[in-house]
Length: 571
Image (cartoon, rainbow, N blue to C red; front, top):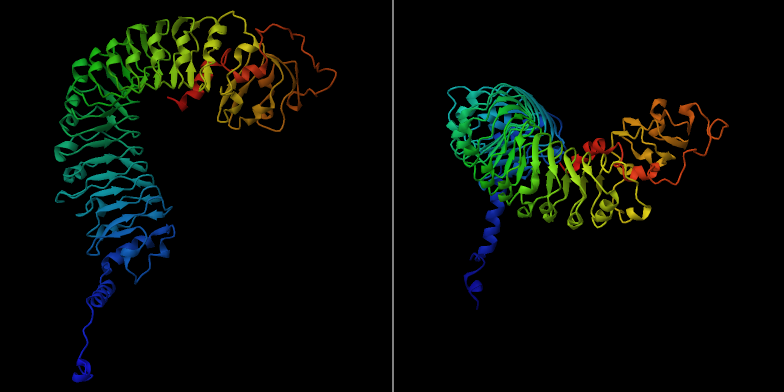
């Protein structure tokens, strides 16, 4: 007889441990969820949105908010993260989010939120990261009560909004743990606070560009021993670079572009920033030479000194910055021969912009060793002579501007450039004076050269007074965004292309072309008053037909203008 039969039906059977565990987990899942207070705070935030981005699909009262879209909870079911970036949500940020006592990270970036930044978020005792960038938030940042204890906030990104007013000092006074602040692309005014690092010794990133800050650069920033990134370009700052600033020796990125700064760049200060990778002081009023000590910045990758009043020659020590990728020195008063700089020591160089200076001599042969160079702009200087065959070795080159110099032998130049298979933009205007246009065979091999007709974002085109012959290509109608067009005083003929952008310009744009016809010119095509054969047609290759001008729109008057239009893709 078995034991069950001996003991009768009242003997309990043993349950397996696996079944017990499943029952325990099921019980826990039904009893453990976010708190009612957290659920209520989140629903209040939702109720203040005029567009919820579909959140109501999962944000339902009576359900576990830890399962809601964009919500993350800890193991003890406390809401720790609200991540609602790029949801197209619209409305105001409810102060109720500050009631989430376990919230650590809040990301509402790239939405359509408006209104003020609730003080409850800034004074939260738990939040360490706030990212509300790329919204429409506005108004001033609120002061915090002086009695507010130190807050744990480490990262604050309020960039690309509509905030105004001055930075309240009380905020930075309680942010003892702040590591990174990005307030760029707003409308903040007043002076840059000097107490960031005094209160936050671990402060490392400060981005304030594209605002309306004024006054001088605070010397207190020099006490930021951990500061790696300082960007304050595109403001109204004035004065000089304070010596104290260079005590922030951890700096890797320093940018004060487009301000009203002046003075000099002292060599003894530059050498202190041995970790510097980016130096951008463009669009200011600095008046000095480039210090020779710049060669000690071994990690320097980007150097922007454009649009200043700097002068002298480029120091040979620049070639010691072997990590350089971008060098932009345009629109200064630099002069001299560049052969003292051994560019072959810069194998990573991709962009070299020396436009609008007074450099002279021939293009140094060492430049042709820069195999990574994709954009080279030497326009509006005093370079002369023939182009070297070494130019053909620059296989990565896609943008080349030699406009407004004194180069010679156009046939040789085109022959050399034929091997530049990646070349898409070639600007050679205001050179090769009184030279004949080479035979058509000399320009074969430029299949990748970008034509003006394909520059569909072109805003302005002036081809006036160039003795151009032929007809106006219908493909010019591809220039959908062009706002100014002038092709007057040439010897063009035939109909003005109809049904597109070109036919919308005033008749003055076509003056001086007696053989053009079309409704906007009050000359009907095919009438007796409109000859169809130009009396200037000859075999002289020095007068180029318009079709050639469109493909090589730089040999004549277009060079400098076109140079400014297409450069944005490279500089």
